[in-house]
Amino acid sequence: MSDQIKFTSPTEVELNEVEHPAWDEPVICRVEVDLPGWLTKLTGQSHWEVYSEEEEENCVSFAMRSSNHHRLQKAMASAESDLQAEVTLYHNGYAVVDVNGKSLFDGALTHATNDCARLSYYHMSGEPIALN
Image (cartoon, rainbow, N blue to C red; front, side, top):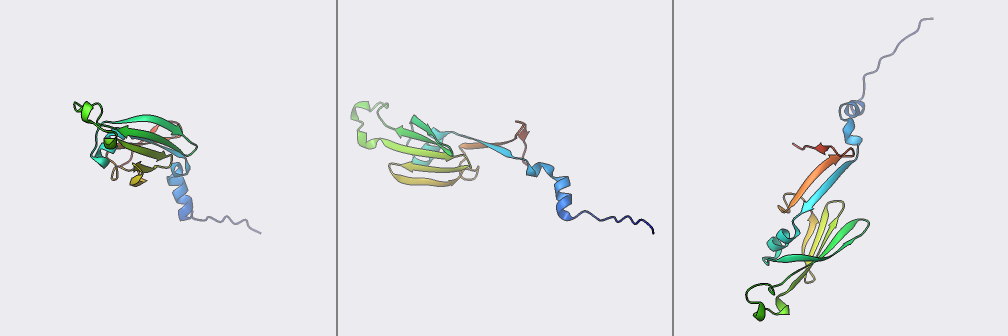
């Protein structure tokens, strides 16, 4: 009786696992958003400020306002010219912006949808990931 050694070639899936083991590792996406700049672009109204912030398990919401009260026409400004906004940034990269109860943005934060957002990606170790 002779011993036979059988060689098998690796499957495509096995090759991909060997060639790209990092694809199975978690990636952290960090989003930095210039909220006043973004709201200025969305509304055409400037001088936005954050007046409250609330963090939940899956998102962070910012209550913001823009008013003409600090301009030179301070005495002539009325409460009707004030805008109220709620910006909700979800941890998965999705965002919702409502201004005076009207939806102005509802979608994913990317460089294509928001040039006021900067996305950075990191390994769990904290090492930055460079995308081509």
